[in-house]
Length: 104
Image (tube, rainbow, N blue to C red; front, side, top):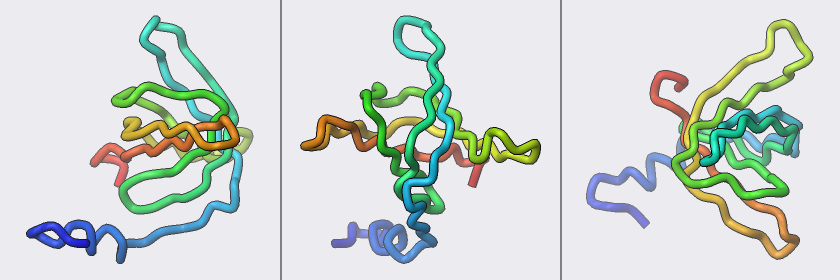
């Protein structure tokens, strides 16, 4: 399960936090130029990215802003790009985000 340089093993050993479906706000602009804002569940948070549960797909390579505790004055924003959007059996989408290098 490792490639020649061991990145897969390194990724699996890195910090990972089960978010217990904490609600986060996400913001993105779709291919039509429309700005979107949704409150969705964050399933998993790791050093390099997030796994989100969304009722609609978001196109791969779309830039997304994730806001934790948006109602709080000290809310935190993270920036990333969609790596994958996989439709689940329940009709929702598992959205995988890679965080921008500057956000790590």
